Length: 219
Image (cartoon, rainbow, N blue to C red; front, side):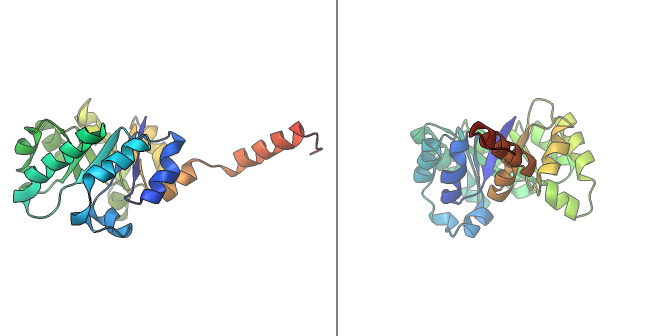
C-alpha cells in the first residue's frame, strides 16, 4: 500500500510526513494556490529538498503553461529531484495536446503520471504511452454521476502492473476502504482526510481505558 500526501502546504508536510504513513507528496497548481503559493515562482529544488528532508521518496508535480514549455519544465523538475535525492514525477493532464508531449518527456528518463483520468479508455492510452501512473479522480467522478467504483476497478484490470492506478479526489475513509477491498493500493490524500484516517473514537477510548488501568484507576 502506497499513500501520498496531496497538498502544497508545507506546514501540513511538516505535520504529517513524520508519521511515516506516506511514500511521498503530490501537488498541482490548484493545490499550490490553496496553499498561498504562486505556482510559476515555486523553487522546485527547495520543495524537493524539503520533501526529502521529511522522508518523502517521491514528489509529484504538474506541468503548466504552454505545452511547448512542458519538456524543459519536466527536465528542471527531474534535476531538482536528483539534487535532493528523491524521485520526482511529472504530472501531465490527459488532454490531447499534453499527451503529445509525453514521448519527449519520457525520453528524459524520468517517471510520469497522467492525471485527470475519468474513463477506462484513458488508461488504455496511459498504458500505450508507458506511463508510470494514471490518476483517476474518484470523488469528482461520483459527483458527476459516474459509477466510479466500477470504473476504477476496470481501470485497474486494464492497467495490470503499469501504469499504477493512483486514486485521487477522495472524500472520506470509507471510499479508500471500498477501493482497497477491490485491490487498489495507491492513494493520494488531502491533509484533513489523512488526519481522519489516523483516528477512530472507539480506539481513542480504548487507549484511554488502558492508560487509566495502568495508573490503577477504576473504570
